[in-house]
Length: 341
Image (cartoon, rainbow, N blue to C red; front, side, top):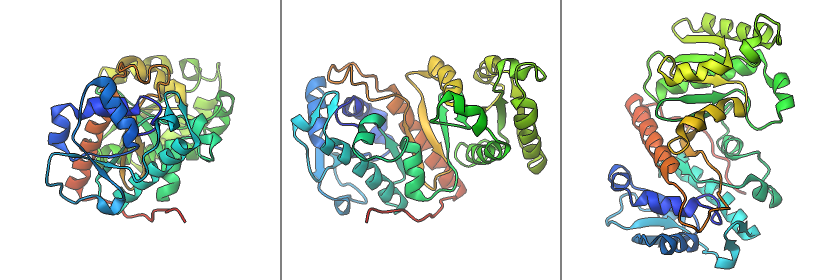
């Protein structure tokens, strides 16, 4: 569910009323049932809920049309006031992410689809990670993960994620680019069924440095990394560095299967411009399938009933696509899950 004091419960209720969702999968909601019922009341959209008190109660094959909600300790409305989550709500949010990963690693679920969290609120209550991506990496012990935003006509992966803009040039190293390309290309093949992915690597500077006039990162770091990757993977179509102001247009028009952006806003601004209501955040490199909405908690509109479910619906579609391709390739991996002590 994500943050119960945000729009997460509302977009879940709206998404669960789309007929194709429950025809395509058996959703299990992990989150506060009080927040979910409040959202149902606000939207006047009832759902047949079945509250489960522990992960052990999750059935392998549900026998009725009810929607399972795992919620051992429902919170009070005071704990989940819109835009003002309590310490208890923050702790619950972290607990449910951990539980979802555990269920999926253990084979009780095929994928995790996460709702929006408010990082600052969680940090105030002991959350030690910049965001979902880093937390999931720690939980699964994955050696290297990549954030990718995916929409119907554009996919964008990131070399650096949550850091200050002034730190980006120092964080862009040949090794980091190579690791990111390895994970990205491997996932496009395994999770999206693209036999020979076409990946464009964006430059860092205006006009991709223009032969060193506007910076040497392209010639000294990015281009050598691309050359090394192509030498080691001659069957892969990886090109660049491309001028950042045009590469996303070319990808949107179908020239590439994905763009590798160098930093957060370089990649997310064009992606959200064209796919704001139909994009998903995907964590590549995990032993499990994980997708997420690509928006925040929406504290300013929580409770108004106006939150758009499009991103959650696309996250569900993307998760189903990835599960299908992993099953077809029989590529499920096993990694140790770091459980709570």
